[in-house]
Image (cartoon, rainbow, N blue to C red):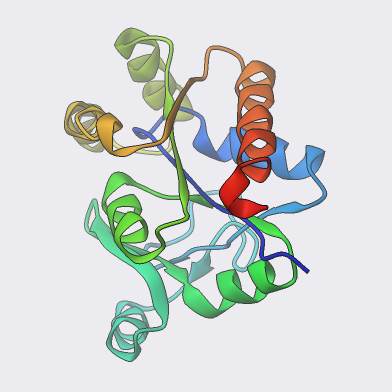
Length: 191
């Protein structure tokens, strides 16, 4: 059995990474997402073990010390990371795994997993990005501004990715990423 692909989907907060990942996983039986761990508190409607594994900060730091995370970062005052064992088990079963992570985590993946496929998701415009951040209604105004300002720094990372996909429309973005997966599976090096 062939080892599954490792895909990374990054982009500024509000680009629709979660929505695109969810739709991709529903359409592709061989694709699953990895449930990240975080030290932040759940947002309204989020469930432990479904959206994230919510851990106390001390427990998260223990995972870092043990080398149990494929990547991790401190973002907006909270830790986020990807459990290494979970990803490797799924890939060993032939499943493709998609990670919805920020540019800090993507950099770690790029250094650690050379065959990883990095995709940068962009909004149609910065104005639309601001509208999406505001429209979520999950953060205070100062946090929304912080996320929007951080987007400018994240955009500078695009050249470190293999692909860029604009999320003008979720179904179109999903179709483009499915095409990327198909193309990657046809690479001579993988066959």
